[in-house]
Length: 72
Image (cartoon, rainbow, N blue to C red; front, side, top):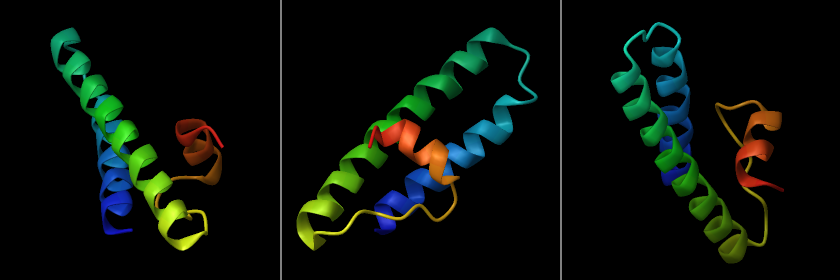
């Protein structure tokens, strides 16, 4: 759960930074980092579901954003 929370935090922070980024190369790095955090969030969410039998409930992201990322 801590790992999933950290990935949510990373996604939120990256989104906040991307708002003001004007350099394409920096934006590309942020987008890649976000993709990595999305991958990790999906993996953590699956593992939480397998171990506990309950779905992970997002703490920082809107439920709709979380669902878009994990695809459930």
